[in-house]
Length: 389
Image (tube, rainbow, N blue to C red; front, side):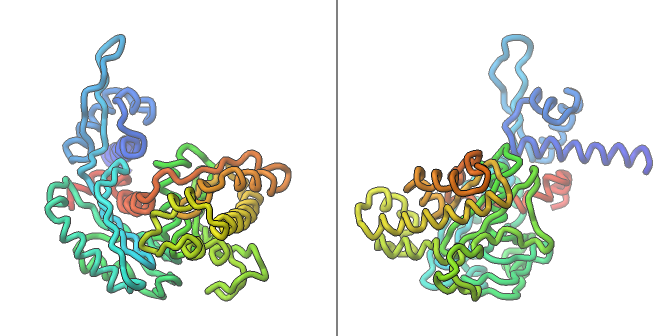
């Protein structure tokens, strides 16, 4: 490697380091970037200048320090955006997410039936067309990220199986790319949720964490082990919903009985509260205020079964924190004391007493932030690539 190419490679890595820090931890002062990136003040100044010229960051004045000149605050540009899409059995949700994890828009399009791939593409195209004026004001629209409730080969953008959607062995990236004319990436929704919570949410700063999400499409999750996401040999790790917790339980679509997502189930909660899928976002308020015996009994039943699953996962992964999203977060909020006590007592050797149970911090924006993060990944690695878009 020549000296020139070595210098360019070092600068590229330094640009990536500064932009990633601003995106994931910002806004930060230049002084904070010096410490976080282990670079000199003059180097940080030059890198921030280049990133500013690319439209990726901007600076604002900071409050004056007690001594010396105030260090400017460096912000990742919220006007650099990614589109994010999460198709589910009852809706297609489309979002616009800026660098820094800022969700500018979230539009949930309720469907009267389970959307086909073609339905999801057409709904997304219509929503994006409706946002055309807003998107035109963005500095850069980098692409679209898909959060799919199923097994996804992220490298080729193919859904192996999304059972609740009825999608099997289909290319999902191609149809969205052709419809929208932009780069598209796809991954499992819970994997992306794990990524979002570990960067911006309740699991930020934890090196060993589990995330479980519950939606109309079932239960999935992900693990952060030693600070690294656990992908598995084929990238399908985290199918926690198919852990058997009740061998004589109900039949699961996977062919077995008593899987977690069959026994701990949004449909059952909606049934006992009288809500339908379109009203699912009201579930927490209804559960908190309900005095109905069937509702309280179902909450206890699902809470106890969820505790069995979480205890098993604690035995396997020994996490410091378990983050619960979707309706699992609602169950935690409905009876935190019962769930926490069961998880503390369940695992071997007292491991459960060391585990924090937290609700996903990003709420309804979680999967959109995760899908956008998959789009931002290339830019964070190669900030100069934005100049060729």
